[in-house]
Image (cartoon, rainbow, N blue to C red; front, side):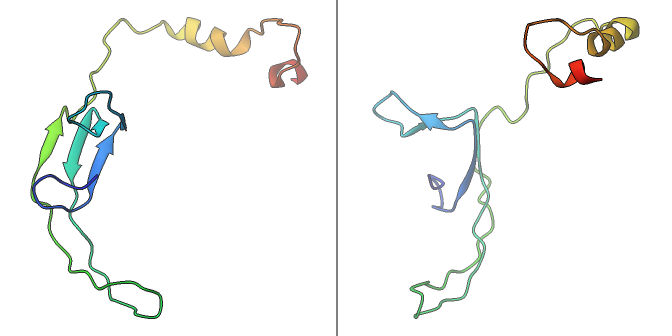
Length: 96
């Protein structure tokens, strides 16, 4: 979907079709990235395009929400990777 201000391409984080009639896409964050220039080629049907700078349009939260909690002790983290649970299926750890 193009930028609503200048029509240049946008970067969308987590895009999905929107169930709301007024919007085409739902997203958590969107930002205008501008347009890169290209030369035209009539044989291949490519039209020339001028480069444009981003217009500065942004929508949504630009950063991820950090999940806070107590870190696990080092001993417990190391044990997670060395203890093998038997599930009845062969996995890579069973061969070691």
